[in-house]
Image 1 (cartoon, rainbow, N blue to C red):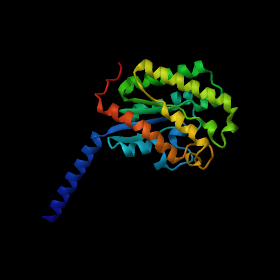
Image 2: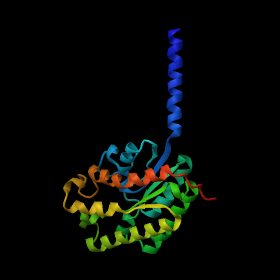
Image 3: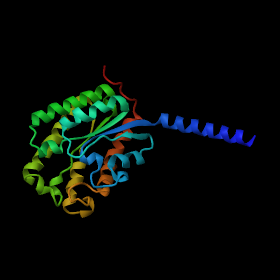
Image 4: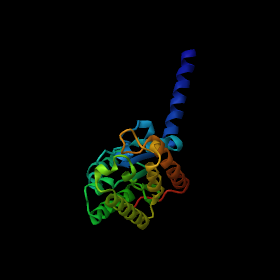
Length: 226
């Protein structure tokens, strides 16, 4: 009889765990090196920190790749979403467009393609776009173009993404830019490679991103577009 009781307990426990997982929101993070967390541990990546702080989220995918541009994201990350079936998506993309000199008009068009696809898949109320940080304030920032020019480029793509989000009723988190600029005076905000954010900087990002995500999760989700 004991083994039957144990089997029943395991079955009920497994069912409870499955129900708990089904209640969680399937979360996918799209982006480049900042989203995959180049030079930090997996636990220190900001999407992982966000999921750890918001128990409603289940991070089921992070297909971001170091060096990806907005075009790379369209061709290599967006196609994965049909199988991943996300219910909430974060997007941070653009720094490599700046590094490679992609024209602002091209970046704007690409951002529109990405956001329109997310609008169809999850709806405007389940998309959070994050500003691109200012890498020029890091020790190695000058290795990737004239700092003044690149800084202006980062500001422009952030303005573009913010405008495209506002046009679609999507959330945009701008604070990340200012947080990243504190790295010029605080080495704790820079990863060991001297270029990317540290886990501590990502923690500060999440302090700004988390309230936005919680607000969206508390609201009735907007149905995806037809």
